Image 1 (spheres, rainbow, N blue to C red):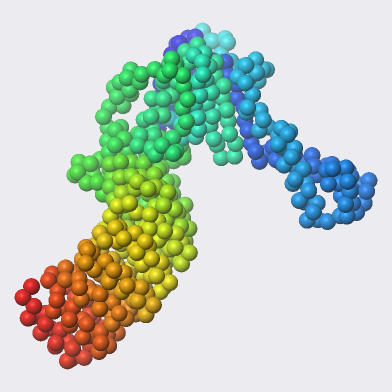
Image 2 (cartoon, one colour):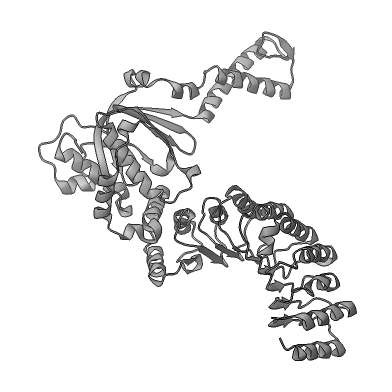
Length: 546
């Protein structure tokens, strides 16, 4: 860190520690640079142009009452809708011509660094953020480290800070300068940096960025275009990090580091209980993370950084959340985890009171991530409307691997939704063959749904791995389904409780019991069975040697 004085370095460290020290933020590198910062806000530029157009329109209307200028020197009859349309068209054309600020981003670096907007700054690279400080020309004779660390004695000012999660691109075409683009909520910021130690600064940024984005999907990583001479090896920086942080930061595939980075990004409180829970799971060798065991599970401030750290984590293979009435934003983040995670094999989301768009996002995530490994999906006790369910079934249709278990108990599904599900099974024959558990209990399967389900069961009967079928209280017509189930000799559990079984259904059920090889549990409570058929079923079960 070749800064002018030791006091200057201590000052910068003290200011960053005061801001984000609770997250473990430390400086990696710092350098005096020549820097130009450009802000592009499309919304702001559009508003400015619209004001210009509105002013022009008002001036014209003042001179020509009841008429409107269409921008081509012609005037037409006044119309509110047409006035708005023509005003927006004029605004769009002005933006395309470069009236707005968007064209400023495309200038050459020589214009940037030679302009009056270019300033001398201190560029500081931290573990989680990049900082720009105003340099100090006159340093005091005496500076107490305690005063500097506490911020009481200032010799420098923080100008701006950017988190690595907002870094969109890093470009270097010369060894004396580079570009960084950060995307914030309402604007994009481009920073042009001229620095004699450009390769070293870029290496520090790369190393810090690599640690907080460990396991991230390539589609969400920033674009790095750096010339070969400025692309230094990171061994020295990684060794320094390892010596400073120890092995704990990389526990559970870097969960701790990612969690700290997420807390720093969201400025949320650092929850030590969540970290201790992860450590205990690793010690037990468990790869299943039950979010219900976390304290304050319904708090958005606690859960959002935790979920952000789990989104790309490659250690945990199962995520479970039950009986949580937390913030809808948090539930949507959970649904989107599948979009980038290629390690999760099991997701259980039960009784969440989730908004419908959560299931739309989950379906889109399944479709987007063709390499996901999800084999067990449990969405029981959530109301899933027909449209979001159609998106979810399309995600199932695109599976490239086995779906082992699908639990949709009490999801308020109707016959049409069951038809969508069966269509997805038929459209992905290989995926549906591997299905071992299917739970549609407490949904209205009805006559139409029973016909669709029976058709699929008959189609896969020779190669299906189905072992557990739950159809409790579904108003299903077993006389349809039973004709196919007769061929499922390996079925271990069949739950038909709270469904009316007529004479034909009872005969098929008797035939199913006689042909079964591995049936262990048969649920028939509240089915209205007469004594004759109940006795016959018990006799068949007793006489079945298998």
